[in-house]
Image: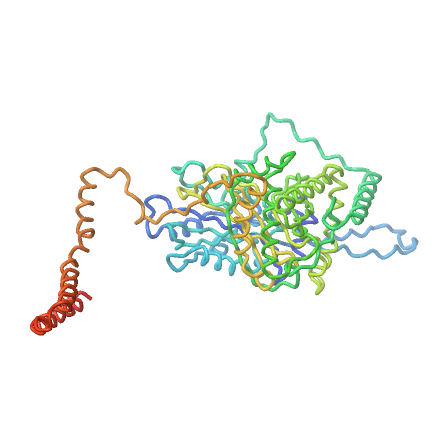
Length: 576
């Protein structure tokens, strides 16, 4: 932090997300939350919610931070009387202006909050299309970098909230940490503030009885040089590994249809996966596998099928860049603290069981790198691995400098049922950013017993991301069968039923009798058609008997039969 409490400096990662922001690859992130309307909510519920949010003051950082630039102070000229006798000093380079986050005294929430309506009843398709259109627009840097979009008209008595934040101020872990102050596990709790109106001073104050945190030890010059040397050697050693094996070397990802120059278009696919089923799969792996490793295997299988459909599966495995949350060295109110590991998705392996075990092996090898390197060496390794991509991001060659084929991220979320002023949270999907040259990002958030997966894609390179979502749901069952597990019949999270379809609670016996009487005429209605059917059968019988009778009898009865047939035909026309 700066000496000025109203100014916060940016770290290297924050600068990266600002510098690589382009019209075709904007670096903001989003979150889509779906809620069930509270009981007794009126038709004007969303209008009231919109008005309430517009009138909620902005208190929480960094929602009141604006990007600003400060000029370095010039050195004061000395008043030495004999200064003219000294040789002229070497001309110094003028220090560059610094970008900082400046805290504003007042922010108008109305400039950041929007209300939308889907054509009723709006389904997941219509919701996804709206969110995709909202996601492509870049945030206005002349004001704080965030937006909130309320979306009404979702089928099943639901509504959605799409939050849009710039990645230079938020990482996924921090966003989840802030959101817990605006939710409750009790449906009866009301007057919860929106996320930007939370008074963080009431929640983040340190316990006065707790010992103060130990000051961070500044490494010596030799330690810094040794950390850089270790990072360089580790990267050099990784280059000797075969594709997809051991520690993955940066920039060893194969060329695929998922990688190329991006356009500004976006599409969002969604699916929910069962965490208990994924844990059971992990337990079936020798030595155990984490939910995140099972997730990577599921994505690998889904992407293999997706690329096969398009006859575009590369011979070498896809490489996923997986962000890893890091400890913050500063008590900062904005910014990022994220590292990353590269993992092979083993898409070149056809056998599902072998592919799962290979993904787990790759994940373990690359997570082991974090343990083998100390914090400073690993930080330098991450910087070295990302530097070429950062430098090329704004050039026409950005899509050719690939640290990985795609990003797969897992953000921790709430475990218990959540409510916001009586509205139950049903699902939460991430709508993340695409890096230059990467047309696909898969970000999941665990919520209760589900992993809610948001699949953000550039449809000009990666069309129909919902197809990947469908394959991911099916891949879970394929892996269960491959590992000898009985596929679970755990149902997906069911969408809330419409109000008119719900069964009334506590129906009395008298009410049931009334309902039965009302239903009785409907069941008896088909019997009215019986006389017409019988008339038709009689006519057919008469026709058959006339054929067997003598010619004389036939001649006598023919007019009668014709008349009966005419009557039956008229009856049928009336019935139609």
